[in-house]
Length: 145
Image (cartoon, rainbow, N blue to C red):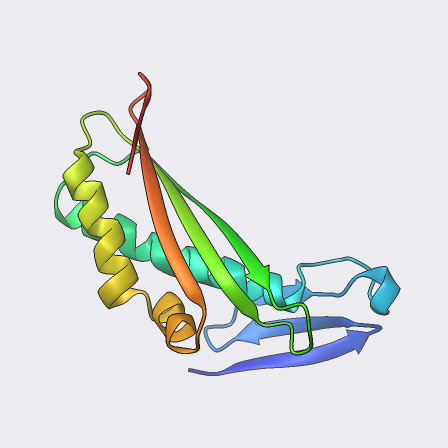
């Protein structure tokens, strides 16, 4: 896997993945950026959210669960001193579908967290405290897990 990150100006960069997709990454104006894209640490957090969501959806679809939507809300805390690393990350999934079983969703979230999500497992091994929760939205109220 490869990527390239090219500085454009200020604190703006264009990152290109090995598969040919690009994204603008920028800093805030008080650090020389123009606020034209997510911050680098935000990209890391979004990558984790996408990685674990990918797993949860794949696991649920393989078990023929009737998923109509999946949203991962990712919140992180960072160290107060430099380097301002992530210290805690919480991922909350809201999975929608008519007839979803709580046990299926719980298993999908658990498998992603413990076995499949390379991003969260890597950060966890680096000392980040990572937690997960979920709710199921069937259009008639929520089930929390």
